[in-house]
Length: 266
Image 1 (cartoon, rainbow, N blue to C red):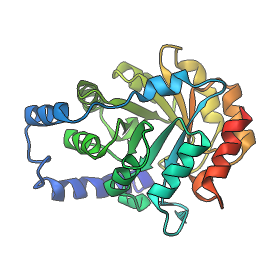
Image 2: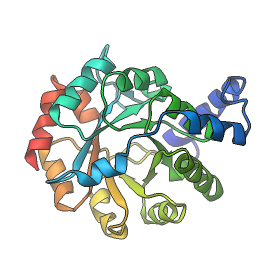
Image 3: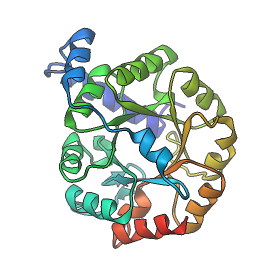
Image 4: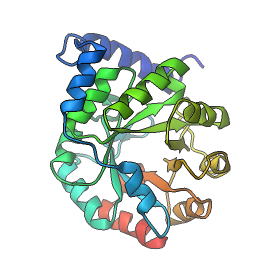
């Protein structure tokens, strides 16, 4: 799989993290990181918010500036404006894409946190503990961990570390084996991404097919791939607990109105 989108993003992220290790959080020991993270304000309950939502699945609306495959989605997108529109349109939670390959940053997350009280997911390529602390410091209640990007021991360690800080983890998977790995590693919030991060091709049926592998005690999120109300209804009929929608909303003339259409369709 050499040379895939995921390989390139991870290689760039490792180089970026290596350069950032001189920073304050990155220079701390694991114990110091845990102590710093514990002193930060308590995280909101993302899983509780998603599971309490009825009827139909909850919607995690995403602020996303660009995609490596599609380029810019919305010129001069303003996090505060979009976050306000999402909250008013019925989003249960928000995701903020913070990786530079998507033209994102932690500053986007900070602005969204200052604007809304919804539970926030920091969506980034997280490989080290200090990134989780920085996400919490910036206002995140949960972080994304990608099974395909992490060896089993590190995945378990990062999930445990986030939980120790009172945060939650959306553990992203792409096939049945990764779903099993996520649950075995301690994840309680299981995401299936319809977008293959190796090729960036979309297969929404994957989110439907893997639903039966995740017991009711876990929370199941269908990520990416929604491009119509019909797509959202298909996922709702499959019994997903939540859908995460980004590009479809960000490309719309009015992201808030487009989100309201989805929310009202369930």
